[in-house]
Image 1 (cartoon, rainbow, N blue to C red):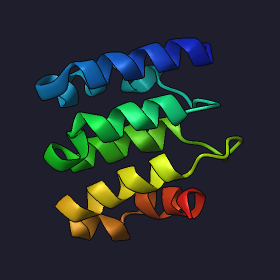
Image 2 (cartoon, rainbow, N blue to C red):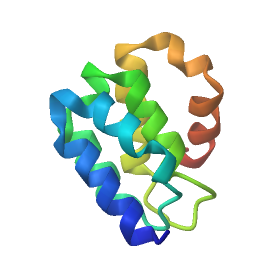
Image 3 (spheres, rainbow, N blue to C red):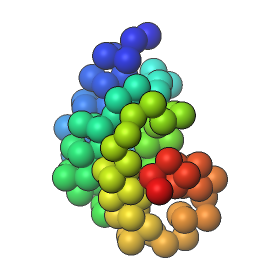
Image 4 (tube, rainbow, N blue to C red):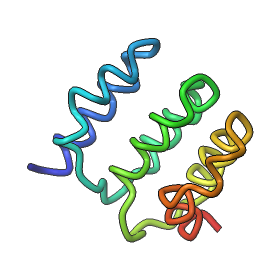
Length: 104
């Protein structure tokens, strides 16, 4: 699968809004790391999904963020801050800890 397909499936999940969890469950096995996720992270941050569904949003981030080959960590930092603002206990989650290394 290509990076382009993963981006499209991620956008589809975000667009599902209130059905985000169901959409993510349907496509999660198809997701792979996105080389330049800046636009996706910005869309996620603006979507409000982190406030409403922090755990599934963290699942999505964990699926699409790999070793950083990009430089814009501000969007990732904003996403992670929104997650822990809604669910502070997720800051101990191994997915969160892995992503935090790339955001700061």
